[in-house]
Amino acid sequence: MITTHTHHHYYIINKPPNMVSQFVSPDDVGLLGDLAFEFPEGIHAIGRLDGHSEGLLILTTNKRVTNLLFQGEVPHKRTYWVNVGHHVSEETLHKLRTGIGIRIKGDVEYVTSPCEVEIIPRPEILVPHASESWEGVPNTWLKITLTEGKYHQIRKMVRTAGHRCKRLIRVSIEDLELGDLAAGGVKEIEESEFFRLLKIDNWQ
Image (tube, rainbow, N blue to C red; front, side):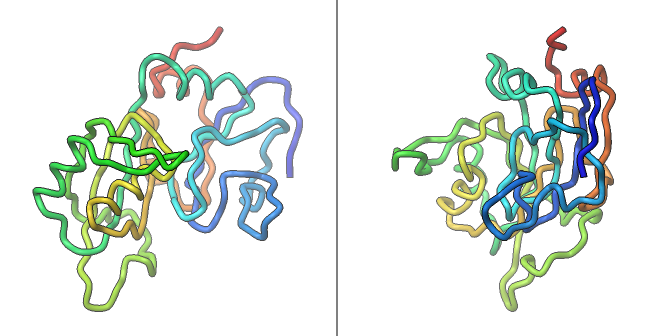
């Protein structure tokens, strides 16, 4: 349900898997409106996650945030926890960190910008998901921080490196963090705090 307000609102949600970053879709999919929360009129998602991905998603009534955050001169860091099949070698980590070729729109070869990649223990805060378990096949958790966001970039990066992305969770954008927000949870952020954590200048 959507309610009406006159000033801007800023929220983060922990988007669960199998939900698109939209309130309306012609397809039979999970929608943001299925969450147990009454969002204000004019709400929309910023920096969408694909249907299979999870984690931090920004929702706001302020239409200028997209330009400020993702189309400005200074790129903003986004951090993800990524579960992939099999063990990841040091050679593969180096490839992911220094730039790896992926196919982007128009079937163009694109070499990704350098980014931060490290192997991490399985984050204890995560609820187990069936996709993590393949009988007889080990898996590795990675923490990847990048400043660009081509379509399905991380999935394409790890696939090019010889691994399948089994689970992808965005955990932060700059200093705006998912924290312990449960899957499907919604948290409203005060405007000045929202801009401070994202390290963008308040448009006012």
